[in-house]
Length: 125
Image (cartoon, rainbow, N blue to C red; front, side, top):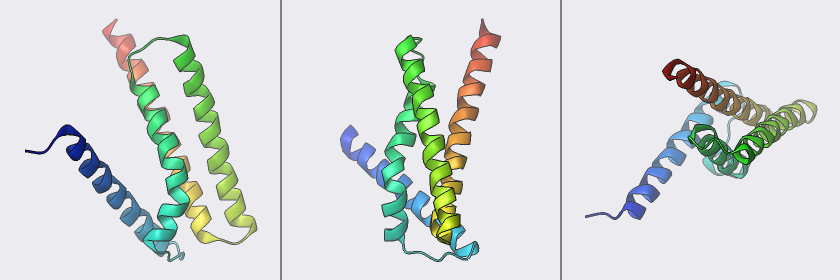
C-alpha cells in the first residue's frame, strides 16, 4: 500500500509531465520547438508561485494577511508573465513568448477561481 507522500509525489510528477508535454506541443505549434528540459527550466521557476497562489486563493481562511499575500502574489505573477512575454518579443525567442502566455493563462485561471469562490460564498450567505 502506498503512503500519502508517495501518492502525492506520483501525482505531482504526473501533473508536471502533463504540463510539460502540453507546453511542448503548444510551443511546437507556435513555431518554437523546445525540449522538455528547456520547458521545465523556464517554467519550473514559476510553478511553485502558481501553486502557492492557488493554495492561498482557495483556502477558506479569512485572515487579512493571507489576502494581502494573495494580492502581492497576483501582482508578482502578472509582472513575471508580462516581463517574460516582453523579453520574448524583444529577443525574438518564441519559447519565452509561450512561457509568458502560459503564465498569463495560469494567472487568469487563479483569478477566475478566486472570483468563482467569492461569488459562491456570497450566494451561500
